[in-house]
Amino acid sequence: MNIAAPPPWESSQPLHPVWEQGVRRGPGVVNVLLVAVAALVLVVLAWFLSTTLGGVALILCGILALIPLSICVAGLMWIDRWDPEPRGALWFAFLWGAGISVVAALVLGTYVTELLSLALASTPSDVIGPVLQAPLVEEIAKGLGVLILVFSRRSHFDGPVDGIVYAGMVGAGFAFSENILYFGAAALDGGGLGGLVSVFVIRGLFSPFAHVMFTAALGAVIGLAVARSGRRYIFPAFLLGLVPAIAGHMLWNGGLLVLFTDFFEFYFLIQLPLFLAALASIMALRRAERRLTEKRLGGYAEAGWFTGQEVQMLATPGGRSQALGWARRFGRQQTMKAFIRSATRLAFTRQRIVAGHDRQLNLSREQLLLADVTRLRNELFTASRRHTNA
Image (tube, rainbow, N blue to C red; front, side, top):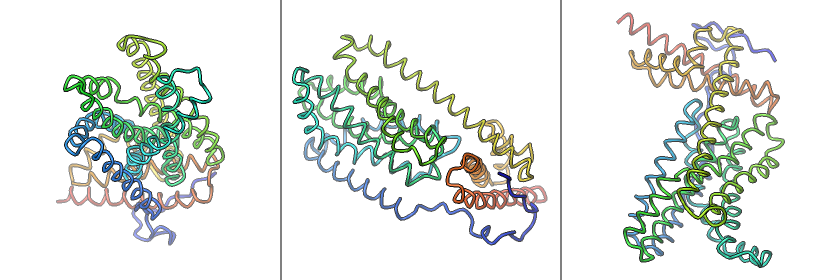
């Protein structure tokens, strides 16, 4: 499909009325409601935990739980650097994981355990709970939040990296609330400070990414389906993605009950290699994102929208760093960030057009993004000339 011819760069008149609209970045009503509902559920959960653990214990355990949460969020933000997701969507993902999915697991867990106990009467109860029930209920509850994000943030859900970031944030939220529960139980069960420190080290420092990894597997599968087939196979991809998410969770929980007796043996033979494999896969997916950005922006360069030098600036880490340094000299770093962000969204929108996904909708988005990069480009050059002439 041909790319529209560019307007004169220095033209002060838009070539089409739609260009005057700009790119709407504000959250829609549905997205605001989703965040509000998820936040309300988290408040209710916090109240419940305060009655169970006590206000002081809840605060102390919450502070401890912030440490592994910070590690997870920092890692996810590193993954998300190339094409950052909307902050509102990430907040919803976290709130869904920390509130709604935890409440669902607490409410439904007992019933599912009873059903599994009836169906698997010969299976020990200490296996049914953590190894069977918890992975099933928790991964489905977390996964539903990812499924909502696919439809509510479709224009920002382009592929496996986006799926990993959204799903990972859901997992990070779930782990945050679950850590508070575990830390509180350790403090109240008579183990004293030593018991609390032991649980914190194992859950918070040795395996902070556990829930992130489980749910990220689901997000990656959904992201692959979206990139290749658009909306058509989202629900089959959701069911398929639950398989590695639940299986990984079962392995993680059941390792010490079924396969190993020593934690460190299990950690270094199973947990650490799985984490390193996941990290290597993510790095490969990020490189694929950069190559796709360069390829699609190269098409716009051939049509006259960018120069070849600008494509290198927008589609390589070094080019972006150099561009931000240049813009910083005359106080336009935020404008350059917006220019890079809009150009990246443009590349992924073109990819959806080429793949035939939501064709008319994405063609309209393409026009708005082309207008946006034109405006931002002119702002940068105008500011640069003023700085040079000052």
